Amino acid sequence: MNEKIVFDQLNKDVADQVHIRQTYKYFNGTERSKGLYDAAIKMGEEVLQEHKEGHNEPQAMVDLVDQAIYNSRKALNGQQTDKHSLHMQLARAGQFLRGQEFTGLPIKTQQYWEREVAKAHNIEVASNTDQTLANQTAIKVATMFDTMEQMRPQLMKEAAQQRAARAKRAIAAREKAEKERQKREAILEKQKALAEQAAKEHKKEEKKSHKQKKTGGLRGFWSFLGFHKS
Image (cartoon, rainbow, N blue to C red; front, side, top):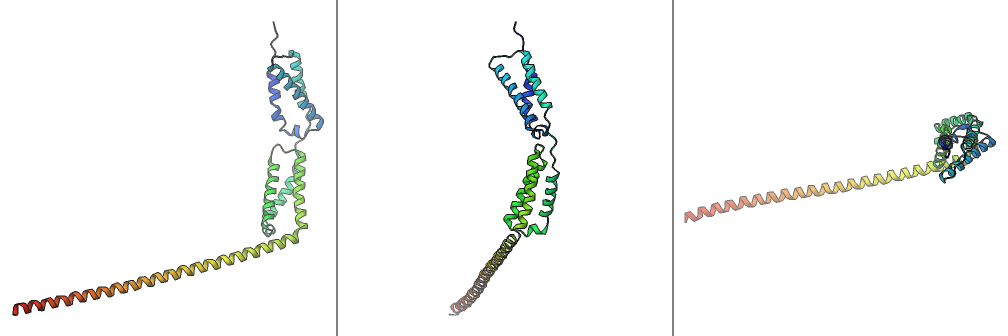
């Protein structure tokens, strides 16, 4: 009678690797501790694959591999990610983005800062940010400030040119709008004059028609009298 091999715990521990790899214990762990865990998981996957293909290892081997996964998981030695430096740089960046100096920068530079600070913020709040990424992001934000200081004269010149260009476009737009307004008013005046002229012509025609009717009526009356007199 063949021994029934139980794979339930091994299946659970192998499947749990997705969650484990998202914890700081794993992603901030030393390469050695992560390597031992990865190797144990690989052995577990191989045992499960053999089971699917109909080749079962003895229960003792299954339990041994599962114990290796458990032990290597407990040995993961990563510490919680220290995001203090990143937090400080983002606080500095947030204050800068709300300041008058930021609004005086060229449009493309403003868009770049907003985009990169948003990315850094997402990294800060993410639960799976490892220490290396947190440090790199903090350094990047600090470098952005340093670069801006070095390029300040050029950026200020570019911003002034953009403001002048926007002012020129605004003036041109106002002038165009004024011309359109004057054009509409001229058309309305012309239409008004034509309407008034038409009204005068209509009134004149009414008077003429009324006079003709009156004259025709008297002429008929006198003709009637002359007819009876004769």
